[in-house]
Image 1 (cartoon, helix red, strand yellow):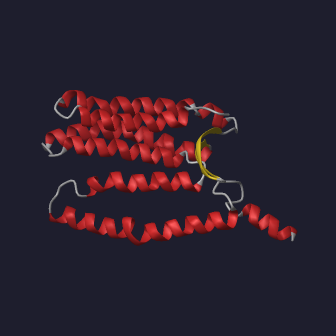
Image 2 (cartoon, helix red, strand yellow; image 1 turned 135 degrees about the vertical axis):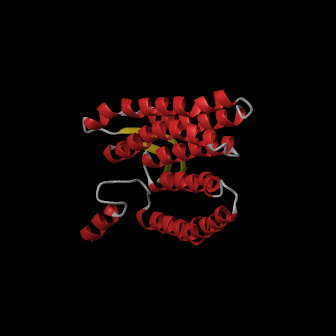
Length: 209
C-alpha cells in the first residue's frame, strides 16, 4: 500500500522544531507546540496500525539516489512498534519537560525543545526506513540534533560529555559505518531491507552456482 503518512509523521516533528524556533519570544505558544505536535504524530502513526496489523506494509518512495538506492519509507510491524512507543512517549515527555524546564528556569529552552522535536523526527524516519541508506541518513541526523542536548547545561561536565559524543559518534564510527554501507552496496547491489537480510539475494545466487 502506498501512502504519504510515513512522511507526514516525520514532517510533523520537523515542522514542530521550526515552529519552536520561530516562537522563541512567545513562550506560551512555543511550549504548546510540542504536546500538540506529539498528539498529531501519534495520531498519524496510529492510523497506520490497521494496515500493518492486517499483515501488509505501507510504502513511499521519494526519489532515487543511485540504481538500487532509494530514499524511501516502509512501515512494517517492527517499525510500527518503535514509532508508536516513541510518539506516545513524546506526548508524556513534552508535557513533563515543559514543567521541568520552567520550574528550574532553564536557559536555552527554545534550543532544547527544537532539538527534542527534531530528534523525534529522525527517530520516526529511522523506524520507517525502507533501506539501509535511508536508515543511515536519519541516524546521522539524529546524531547531529541530539548533540546540543548533550551539552545543554554548558558546564564542565556537559562539555566533556559532548567531546566524547563527537569522538564516539561523529568520528571513527561514522567512517566505519559509511565504509560498511558502500561495501554492502557493492556486494548486494541494493540496500533494501528484504526477508532473510540484505545479502539474501547474494547467498541465493551463490547457491545456484
